Length: 116
Length: 112
Image (tube, rainbow over all chains, first blue to last red; front, top):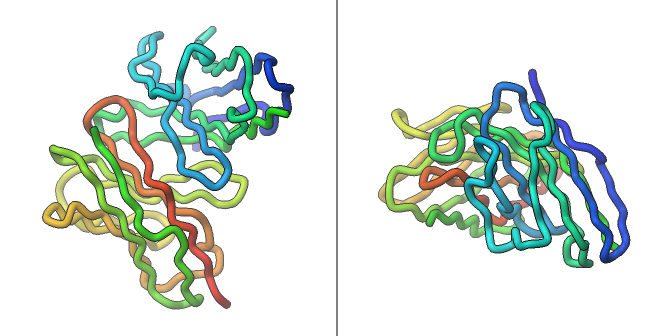
């Protein structure tokens, strides 16, 4: 069964550094997402991406964050200048037809980001 | 905007006992409803979904959920839990826009 893959599984960075989290969505999916989960808390929506542009973003997704689909397979999340509070598990997800339909999101196993 | 409430943060049941995890949603129209399970250190796996039709939906691993519009609920059930069911369970709602929104999760503990 096709999967969403995320790399790396764990990233440690120093405060103020830039990080790029990488994801390869399922190949025939059209909608792509980033969610994050701070340890012990709920899974929070960050951003959705469709047709090479952001379709929705949450208030968490401020100017420090950006997403890109640089080629036909990768979907990246960049944090420009990391803060301690960015430490979390970041999940990438993809979907055939997005949240306005009944197609579920398929999630990767996550990248644990630790900012020191 | 849609929202989800999972009132129980932790639930403990004995192996072999029945299980019900509660989920209430808020959304103006008919929602799309999902249950996901997260094992430690893992991603989120879809258990089941509801979008229309029969209000009782069957999922993987012997789980089912019932959509009750009058109660704005989508509770997850399993008749007999196994030790491997210990995990965190998330209810989620979609329909209004491109995202789905998750509840805070319920951590299920299984007693031997």
